[in-house]
Every structure is written in C-alpha cells, then in structure tokens.
Image (cartoon, rainbow, N blue to C red; front, side):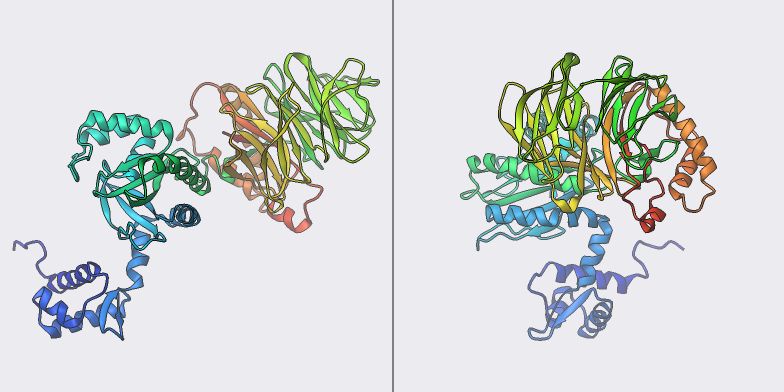
Length: 573
C-alpha cells in the first residue's frame, strides 16, 4: 500500500497549524477565532488546545480569554540550537549596548543560509526595531549575516557566497557577488558590518561577529534602529563598540569540540618530576633547548631538558629571579647571586645587584632590567650597571612582583600584585602606562609572558587559571588549570621532535601514576596517550606556555582535587 506523506497524522498537523497560527499572533487568539481561521470544528479546536496547554506548549490568558505560546516553546527553541552558553554570554553585553545606544540589540546565529534571532534587548524608544525571536533573515543583507560571513575561513565564505541566492529585499540590497565580497573584506578589516537599509527601508543596523577562543565564529550581535536616529556617521562610531562587545562575548565561550582543545584543563600536560614548594621564574634558554625554573622557598634551580626535569643547584636563601647568562643562568637570591651552568656548576657573584632585589629580567643586547625596593615601600626600576648599581628610569609606589621585556614592542612590563596591575614602560619615556587591572577576586597576578601574536599572559594564583590580555588591555582568553595556584609562566617555541620526546616521557610517567585513584589528571593524559595517531600533531615548531605552580599555600583539602600543585605544567597555544 502506498502511503502519502502526512497520512494518518491529521491530528498532529492540526495541532501544528494551531501552534503556527498562535505563534503568528503576538496578542494571542481565542478559540472561536482559531476555529474560523483554520476551518475546524470548535470541539476539535477545544480538544487540541487542552492537550497543548497541558503539555506547556500553549498558555491561556484568563482575563482576555486568548491563547498564547507557552514557555515550553521557548525552552525547546533554546535546546534546538544548543546555544545556552552563547545566549548567557551575550546577555550582559546586549543590555550594555542597549543602555549605551538606546536602541534594540540582537544576538543571532547562522542556521543554514539564514540568520536566526536568538535573543533581543528592546530599546528605550517607542518607535524601535522589534524583530521577533526566532525570526529568520537572509545572510547577505543583514549586519549580523555579513559579520558572520566575514569571520568565516576564506574557502567556506567564498563557497557560501557562490551558492547563495542574493535576493533584493530593498532597492539598496547588495545582489552582486563581487560587491558582496568587497563588502565582506571591508567588514573583516574593520571588525563590524553595516546594514544600510538593505533588508528594511528606514532601518539601519551595525553588527559584529562573535568568535570563540578556538577561532570559530559562533554568531553575531547587533544594534538596530530607525535610519533617522542611526545615521551613517553614528554607525561608524558605534561599530568599534559593538565589535569590542562581541569580542568580550567570544572570550567567555568554551571552544567547540573535545575538551582537549587549548582552553581546557585536559590540554595541560604535567612535566614528570618532583613537585616544588613554590615554583617560579621559568626561563627559556637562548638556544631553545632547555627550560630553567626555580623552587623559591626550598631554594633550588631546576632544569627541564630532553623530557626530564631535575634539580641542579641548591641556594642559601629564597630566589628572586633568573636571567640568562651564556649557556647558564644567574640566580638572584635575597643574599646575593650565583651563576649556574647546565652541569650544575655554581659560582658566587659578589655585589651583582645593589639594594633590596624584587625582580629581574633579560633585555635586548645583554641588558638586564631590575627592580629594587624603596624605603617608602615602592620600587625603583632600571638597568643594572656593571658595578651592580641601578640606573633608575622609573619609580612606582608599590612593590613589583616580576619584570618582563617584550622585544616585539620594545617595552618593559611589570606586575604589581597589590593593585592587580600590569604596567608598561618604554625606555626613554618617564610615563608608566597601566595596561590592565585585574580585580582581586580573579586571583593574584604572577609572572608575565608574551606570545607570537603580541598577547600578554599572566598567571592567577588562587584563580585556577592563566589569562591572555590583548594589547588594548582587554581580557582576551582564559585557560583553566588543574591546580589553584599558578605562580609564573613563560612562552617557549619548541620543535615537533622535542614535543614528541617530551610527551613520550610525560606519558610514560603518567601511565605509572594512572593507577593512583587520586591522580585523575594523569589518568586522563594516559588515556589520551593511548589513543594513537588519531589526531596527529602538525609538523614544524610549536608555541607552548610553561607554567610554574605552588604547593605550599594549597590546603590539604584542595590538594585532594589538585594533586599536580607544585609541578611544572605545559600548555600548547
């Protein structure tokens, strides 16, 4: 027997027709209106309405005696797009943009060849944009759609535009593919898209893409309103604000895919070896073959090379910092300084730095920057001279925890945990610029490192994370750690062969530790190691973050959940 589509589903189709009719009527519809509109008997309509109300898909307004969509419809809509994290991350930014502009703000995501509205924050004016939640719009003539297209990989974007139907919605809609490609290049360059009455005459809109930490475009946010209020000049002013808000939304989103992507705890690898009371001062060697670091409290210098971490020198007082010196390092401690070679040979250096040392770092061309304490509890920062004196260039009013030289921009950076500030200082300029200030609730800042893209990384003690700050001072990325107290960090670039050798050594150690029920992190690494070459690493050098951690300040209870406290961690960037 041949069955035609829909045969035997008459009641279902009628129920869906009811939902469609009520969904298209914002003020709701009564039972008689529905029966007349759909041409159904009132008894049938009553029976269907009762069932839909009981399931939460409809609700009845007892005062006006009309039926409206029930909250279950909204719950199902959210679940259908599986984007609760996107909606939650965007909610605050949508309200802030609404308050800033007075206009309606939207969150949308790509669905097939259309954008669909996921969230809306109504503007303050009686005459305003009011597109319904769940409304679909063409991609090519909306600011949200163009913003999403601009953030796509080139090949995917070109394929999308090639196959799209560029229907004219108004006389100014872009219907030429070459013009659309040019518009998308401009959008990508400036960071925001403009809809200049391209979908509805008299309405303008500015939107920006939401991109997560893995670089995937997840949607777009926008501001829309009447053209007489949103002039072209005002859109150009609002564009950077919308783009910045979209960037903040993206920074809150977890990367799509397995938890082993960068940005999750499982992406962190623990280096085999004994833990430190308080690890600090990771330092990549000039020849790129080894990583130096220190246990500052049980003062010793450690060396990680060829997949092995070992203690090579003990010192007599807490360590303040390490700087490169040929194939070895100079370890500055509270009672002096020692030069330590890769074989562990140690030589005391007399009068190496005058004053109360706070922090040191290497600069360009053999220069060494240092910070020393001032009697009034501040810090003096400058270049170390050959006689150990300090050529002071800046004075600040609080102690400095670390210094780091960024060869990329020719600036010296300092971290001041008391105020949570990261400071920038340019040699030859007396001004001290505050790049960013982190609230105390985020954790204690510790250490500074710079990646190849110019981002500034710092560790958050008691914050279970490391973070990346962009050059504009905005929080750009957060990576969770399996330990509460990260203390310091360094960016390193290693060859693929070195990475493989280190991972083999680490996984061998973790395989031994995996039987320990308290060491779930190592068990996870072991499981990942046995997966074989399903996800082969790309050839060539790899950028990593070396992170030192602390065990001394971690409570016994917390250690049960963070057994890797005190270990050296590695994170692929």
